[in-house]
Every structure is written in structure tokens, then in C-alpha cells.
Image (cartoon, rainbow, N blue to C red):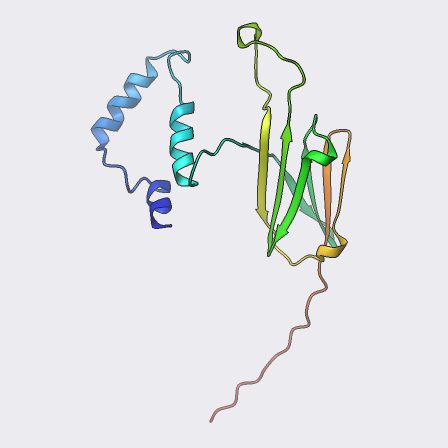
Length: 163
């Protein structure tokens, strides 16, 4: 775990400021076609996360009402059977896969911005929820997860006695 934090905060990198500035100056003069950051991202994040990490991250909105937490996400093109929602302790995880339907060669693409393949998102829930009552629905490409809040335990005050 210490290695993860060293990498996260750049503590494991042995590069001085002048070398970093020189690299930035060189990169500024390259066109976007010459710069390929994907291998850097894959190697760095893959190493941090313990292997080849090749999933897209799902965008979500999380809000609350007086009695529930609501999670919404746009995941068009995904069938309900291809979505896995799980809760482990206080962490909600949504995983799925979006498959491209056509077989199109790379040279025929003019713009390619959509993400195809596996995706996931985990979020720590700020309150306890009633796991048995969670509901999830997919409507017009919008996933809505309703997590009923658990009834709050009563708070008791305990008087400390001097001995």
C-alpha cells in the first residue's frame, strides 16, 4: 500500500525539476498526433492497481432525499442483464459492459469518442442503507438506484463518573 501512495504523490519518481521542465517544453512542441499518453496512463495506473486495468469509469450523480440516497448514471446501449450492482460494507459498485454492435475498421472512423467495453464505478456511501430494500431501474439509458436509508440508531448520552 505504501508503494501506491508513493506513486500517487510522485514520491517514488527520481526526476529533478529541470528534467520535468525539459520534458514539458518538448511535449508542448509536439502535435496531438505525436503525443500518445495512453501507454503512460495504462502502465502507471495498471501498476498502481495491480495489473492491466482497462475499464472505463462510469459517471454518476448521487443525491439524497429525507429517506433515501439516489444514484443516477447515463449508460445508454447497455442491457439490464449486463449491469452488476453490489454493496460491500459501505461501498456501492456498479459494473457493466457496453458492446459495439458493428464491425468498423479504425481507418473508417472520423471521430471516435464513445467508450466501448467494460466500465465500473465505486462510491462510498455516506450513510447506512437497507440493503434488502434497494431498487434499480434502467429507463431510456438512465440507471437509477434507490437506496433507502437505514433507520438511525438512537443516540444516548453517557455520564462519566469520577472515581
